Length: 348
Image 1 (cartoon, rainbow, N blue to C red):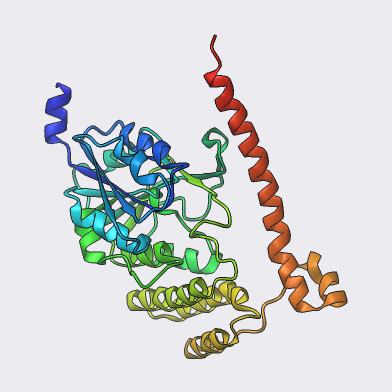
Image 2 (spheres, rainbow, N blue to C red):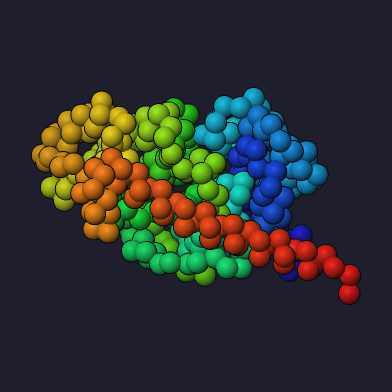
């Protein structure tokens, strides 16, 4: 069978890329989409009002397979909704503008969509985190790396704090439409809330172990970093409320309420000591679930700081010191990345 014939009978996969100030990475991300061995694909990039060279770089890839549109800055969720509205695919591959897909990622997942496949089944994949060199990505399996029912998947997420980044998933158009649009009110954890909705509307998750995704750890400037942003803290609290609502709409049992309490407990510390108003509302949520939350504790190695300088200083140290370590590792990886790229450019 010729490539043209194969393409004609294959389902279309839409690879949707929202982009904002991503000039450093957008070319590599688009190349990873173009390199997919799945032949029938469309790639839609929505430039969300970038102030750097993102748009001009993306436009260099425009072709029959790749389209680029631009809009005033409205946030990642709005950009994703715009991309989906422009798409025609039978399956949807979300891809953030700094992440990468292994060349056979989509093809491996699409192999699972043969006879008997339910379009309400969600396909997931392993993911590895990296700074600059994707060849050094660390793949650290979690309890979500297996086939799971929707309730079991959500229980593990809520109880253990594990997750999957957006690019790990491949979702049918039918299920994507049933889940509804991305919530444009959310500026933080919008992906967490969205995929809880997708999972809750599915008939299960099928894990494809040979399909790989690369998640870039971008640092304090990324949308996944809270910092001291009140806007992100308020978005996180709204996302937490929606998480619990989606989960309880699927099953409202003792084990689900206990998992929801644990989920609140894990996130509570992010609001100390700046947002006592939100902490009070979280305590009200906990009471509605039949529980109560104590002030979050610090890890044992920071106990001496609390004894000498107080809880607030110890909490800041608990945030800052790991971030300092990550920053040093990122700088080292960047230096090696630049050396490797320089060596590749050297004439033989």
